[in-house]
Image (cartoon, rainbow, N blue to C red; front, side):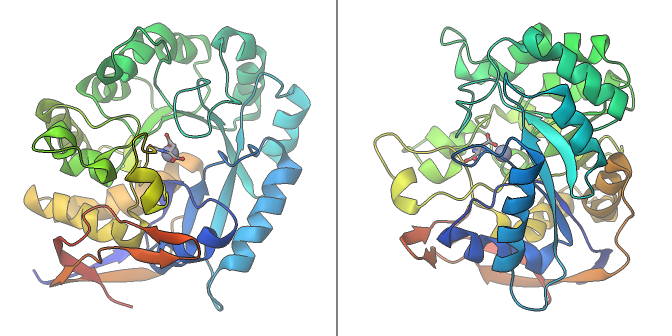
Length: 344
Ligand code: NCD
Ligand code: ZN
């Protein structure tokens, strides 16, 4: 097989930032995807419907001319989020979810929630209004080993959220462990997960063996090989609880190649090609369309796309970097060869 035509996919977890960098990264996403769930972790955080609609206009203005790309907006949950805002969000056409960051868990999560129990009334309102909760599933306890933070979050917080709010739709974002995969498999069909290309392709040796490679550093951090294998199995299983979410998270090259480098991998430039690589290695290209194009919209109760994209088997080298106004962005797998290419 050297050509693969799929229903156009969507990205169910994406960071596009704002300001100058937005133009470059949104063009990459809009080339591949019809829609994307836009993360609200700007500085300051996007916490209200009005702020999200302003941000959405900025994104639409940054799109290449003629693009039909549709940004699906989310709101950042803070200790101050009100039930009124939940109700307003549920009625707003362009708002599709709330994002929960435990305070301090990742890039720009300072405004997140420290004590999850304090927002239970808000989660109850979300359950009633049937608006999904997207969770960055890591504890922030300094004493907890960074490689265990997802697993501990599941035990200490996620299990209780799902049990207390059985009708709340929950996406466990960017799952990275066997434990997360097991949890989602055994939960009700209200619980789903996104999986990133980097967590499917690499284990922690890519980050740490033979030198520190900052462009493989993201949160949750990439784990051991047996976890990667569990993720690959879930993504290629055809189970609709697992769908595509790149977590493409651009940072300037200088902010990553730094004594205290930022977390986030940039994959939007070639997201579908990266996933195709994984599915082909598993001999599961027939499962790619469900994962990339069907299960996400089904979970979010949105129509599937009707147009298509075509991938061609054609080796190409990922650029060393993409220039942006204040410097450059180094992509995931810079200078390496990918074997599928999306046709324009
Ligand atoms: C994301 C970012 O840079 O905004 N970074 C990351 O490592 N994934 C935040 C996030 O999704 O955790
Ligand atoms: Zn993210």
